[in-house]
Amino acid sequence: MTLSAADTLFLVIGVVDISGMFAGIGYMLFLANTKMDLLQKAFKNSWGVTGAGYGGVWAKLMVVGRISGYVTFSTFYIDRGVVSADDLKNLPISLRRKLMALQWGGIVLLTVMFGLALAAELNVV
Image (cartoon, rainbow, N blue to C red; front, side, top):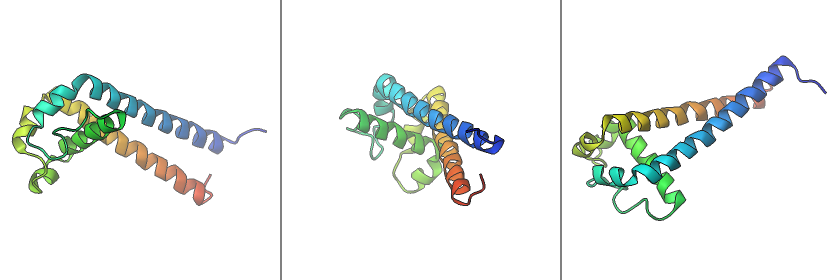
């Protein structure tokens, strides 16, 4: 059985996409284990961060994901009173950039995955 060029491209994009998702989860766990104290101190006045993140792996992933959303879409959360603008100022620039890259990378990878599923459903490939 041989694969056509379109099937091979579909397979490669899918494998790269899923690998990227696992790499993102791994990086989130790395940040959770190395930067959790810094994140807790920086977001001491924000909802959903204080007291969380020490319960286990899932709790750490949720806190890092929540904070990356707060940092990436800060005006949305500041307008609704979920996050304090002072808390965002306390976060170092390098960590802020890493969290934003993590959030946008996840959004792009999820969009690609949905695009592949739609292409498969419509029998494009």
